[in-house]
Image 1 (tube, rainbow, N blue to C red):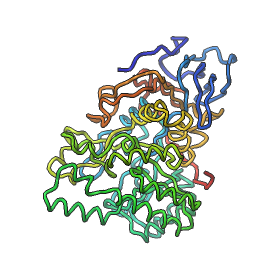
Image 2 (cartoon, helix red, strand yellow):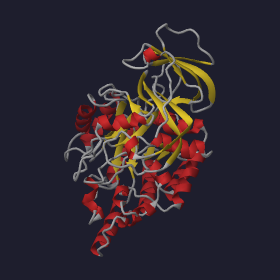
Image 3 (cartoon, one colour):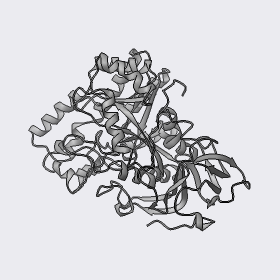
Image 4 (cartoon, one colour):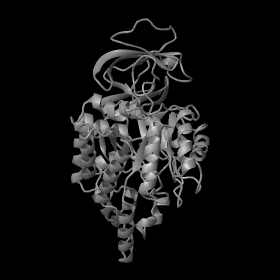
Length: 481
């Protein structure tokens, strides 16, 4: 249960429409560098002023009491999969329910990884499809990563217009699944994306090793969910990370971003690359920080089938150390939801038939705040760096997003560090039927989310509107981080 708090000091301004100005009073204002008690004035959807005390503001200003709360840049989740068709199922969250859940969890921008399109389609094809998915439904701002299904001269020549005209400054390629790229294609993609100032993101797993292990397990009748994890051991991921790092080096030090890192060996490869001054960044997700392979022994183990799978328990602390020492740069979710009662049941007799993915976009911020900040592992400023500042910097959103400087979009989340909440699915706002974090206790909770100056969530209640989210054209990637 979420305790209700009275925020609005002039209650007639607490509901309906977007006020021309909002004054957030006396919260602990946190950015990626420090924290201080201050007021924040929002005018016309942008941050106008941050000061110890603000007394000069329009007469019709909505005043919000933030005393005792942290006031932070809204979360940026750079790894979601909304409305994705994976061939055997379509995810249960579209751009309305997915962004609604994100907003209620303190996230104000998502960058979605588009799903594959028809065989042979160009890069613009899926962008047009996904813009249609989101334009009338998203409740917060959004962008997309390009998706690379194959490489030829036409695809390579198309990349520049995607970056310069469409504002798609990052692209994803896969080393496994149906449209996996071979090493030659990876090299060509890395080199061209580097040339057009785009960041390459990669799903790194060794497809050949996985295929062999999976076929052996199935031939032996080992079809239960626990064998999903055994078919994709951490060495398959770590090998692919190392290979991508070396290919990126061969492609002229092309910038590289590792998605959903789940293990310490892969993290060691990232650290080694950085010691050699190579531009490599890494993302992890709450499921790899808080859950482990023991979930596959549960009666409801199908809920936890995702790729990479959950790892041995000792890998969790290795990832936490990466958050502490700065070798992991972002925390995203890989939110890809399928219903347990129906869609996940496809895998009850064969793990390989279960759609891969879990929900989590609403839980990222409170879980990391509770287990990171309130446990003393990371500072509030580091929390902002992981959830907002670095996602904005890496993916061409800064300083419009991820910042509290005047002129930035007024995307904010107000966290109550004393609010204790036990996560249950009935508190959440997605369109699936479970949460992998059921009954986890959080100390600290997002009590209010503001998107471009509009309150979209308050006290656990969604207050936004479909279609209010804007497509954000992101800036080209530059080697400045």
